[in-house]
Amino acid sequence: MALQPETRAALLAYLELGRPPLVEQARADGEADLGWLFVSACQSDGVQPLSMNAVSLMLTRRYHAGGGSLRTFGSHRIRHATATLLVNNGMPLEEVSRYLGHSSTDVTRRYARQTPDALGRRAAEALERAGLVAIG
Image 1: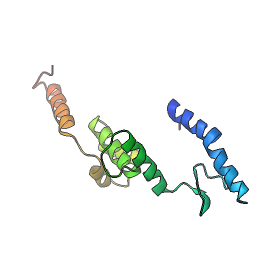
Image 2: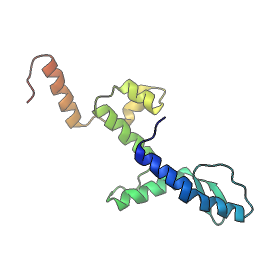
Image 3: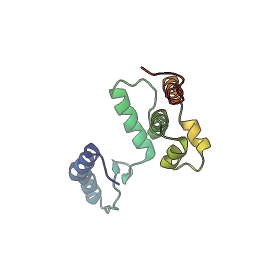
Image 4: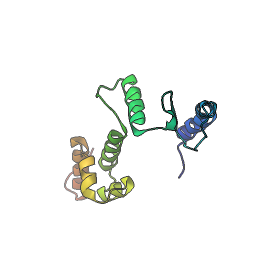
């Protein structure tokens, strides 16, 4: 899988600058580097893999720093937003379901909300294809 250039640059910077100090701290405490990509150094527990809770807290902090007003903003909300964005921009529900790894489109349907704007745009396009309305 290819990474976006910005994602690749951020990951390489983390591997070069962010991860080594955490691993060094573990070695200083007599722990081995167990090879986790993302690590968290907690003084009471030592070096651990980055937990889902830690990721959600980081996402929430960044979201609030950017002006977001929801109480929490975690990875689950990103899945909902991605599904909604894909469906509202024309990706068929079955494909979105496969992309998200859902076993059924019923789950995806709960994630992906059709916005009124997208529904109106798609209805207008369908009517134009049928020769009933001219867009523009």
